[in-house]
Length: 192
Image 1 (cartoon, rainbow, N blue to C red):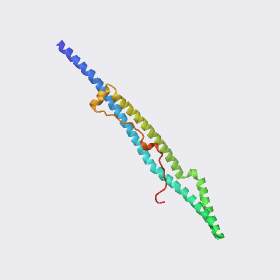
Image 2 (cartoon, rainbow, N blue to C red):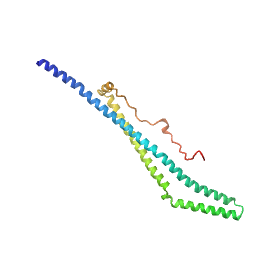
Image 3 (cartoon, helix red, strand yellow):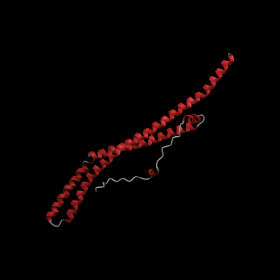
Image 4 (cartoon, rainbow, N blue to C red):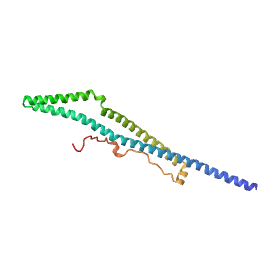
């Protein structure tokens, strides 16, 4: 009986020596895998936030540019009429039109800080800048999580656990080839 008990204890100790590191490595890999997946989801969240902000920003810029464009177009038209006026009546009308356009320009310039479209643009720009920073941080956090996970999964004895349970290597978040080029921004519409 004593011999059988010793064998049983040796078997139990051997099983514990084998399974405890296996369980620890498995749980560690699961935790790191979840952390990497969560970091990737954070990137998606911030990209969606940016995607939601951009149409509002573009719309605000277009709306503001239209306000400016109308004033400057009116000024240019009135100046052209004044320069091309052949008689006093035409000159008076063109001068009056130019004065009215310049008055609107002065109103726009005086009210510039208070323009809602300008405030919206500044607010949206700040939000977009903050979102870009969040995206950058989320990418860095993801790459750090993936590096930690991939390193753990390659180290012995975790590499045995990883291969037994199918923990695959994760890719780092890298900039695409086109990311090195500056984007072209065009606020004109196709109708113009």
